[in-house]
Amino acid sequence: MAKATAIASPADLDAVASVYLLKRAIKGDLEVKYLDHSVIDTMEADYILDSPHGKARVMRFDHHDTKEWTCSAMKVVEYFRMGEPERRLAEAVCWQDNAGWRSLGRDGMDNLLDTALKSLMVAGYKSSEFDSIFKTIFDAMITKFEEDVKVVKSIEAGTIFRSDSNEVLAVKGDFPKDVIFQEFAPQFLVKVSRWGISVTRSAKLQSPDLNDFREQVMTMDKEHINRWFFHPQGFYVGYSTDPDKNEDIPVDPLVFSREILSFVKGSRRTG
Image 1 (cartoon, helix red, strand yellow):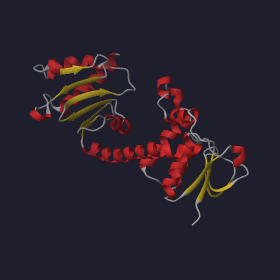
Image 2 (spheres, helix red, strand yellow):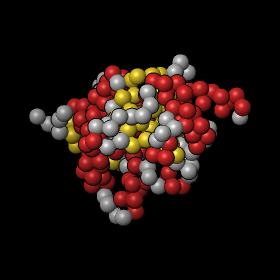
Image 3 (cartoon, rainbow, N blue to C red):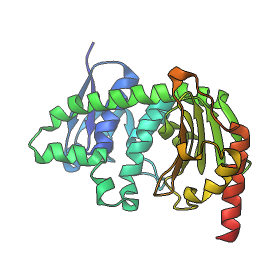
């Protein structure tokens, strides 16, 4: 059986990710060429990726024909009805492809997948090598995203408090904070686990300062106040327990969560 053929625009993050997702979707051998748009214009292939040029015998995946903030990688995901992990990957690509980097400083830009790809180009790697290198990266991301889907269900089952306007979310379980903030977007996260209890303010917020929450903590747990940690930058408060000693948390998590909500609302009224 002949290989399916795909032509993609000169290698950028969207083109490389589109190739990766297409290979994953069709589960077959795929011959890929990254070509200049002027060359693609006279070419024919089963699939055309990230280019409005050339003739596609089966399907063209290109975002240049729409005003939507999307990308060619997402076109592949939607066409083949791929799962949430693949969509998460495509969302990251779309964000970059639509100049999401404008909201980041230079340090943030230097951590983008797109910068990694451009680094390979500058270092002299060939287009034919990009797919192999990024397959390792994308495979790892998909594995994490697959795990995240499972974790989200556990987080939902472990939710013990959530305010009406999503100011405060409290969960019981040692879940990754990045998944909670990405999927549930609380302003303040209360996490209860065998390691203790903590409050973390969303990185999108600069206030209120959780150091100012000390007074409420004092009313709930004056006896152990010196064991509470208040981060100097005001985004975190925590109380650690030793799981090997079967230590109890010195506050009721539900009462504690409601006190956080009261503190947040009060700070905004007086701010």
